[in-house]
Image (cartoon, rainbow, N blue to C red; front, side, top):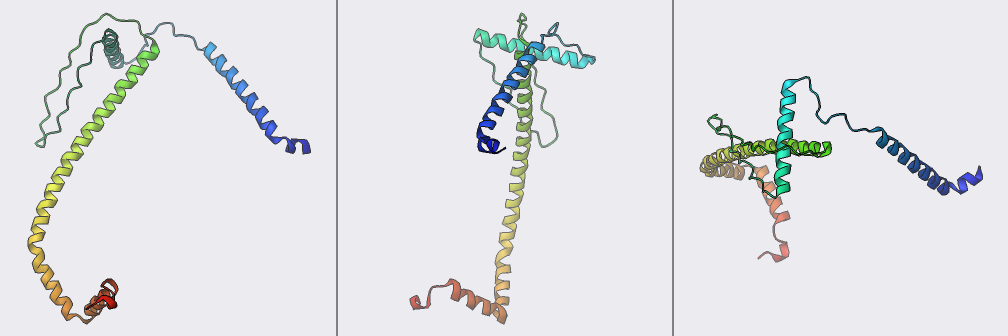
Length: 190
């Protein structure tokens, strides 16, 4: 038992090596078990989902071919900020270029689908940011208008509060105390 406690570091190294070896064997077995599907097309019970998937695949294949040929992508459409009067902007028409289908691996298709989902999420966040910016501008304009109205009323309020403070003995004591603490030292006063 004493030997185990004396060589505890050696036992950890051996246990780590055995765990790594078992993990490698398990991954190799999983790689052998994974067989490619009989056909790359997935079957869907929902016809809308099947049509959407087909359109996404076509768009991904078209983009892959354009990049392979060296074509540049057109810039993404600029989204107009939401209109204040509630009118929706006209729908953006998408131009689809027919291309010959190219055999792409399932991993590439999945990766492209993930990229398209990320782009859609970013577009949604951009719309939200534009709406927040519009609301912030409206709020700033409102606050500026309110501050302008308050500035006109402020001198009367300040003079009224000052005259009240001069007549209040507790306020005068506090003012003298603050002058002593925050003011210049006695030695530097004239």
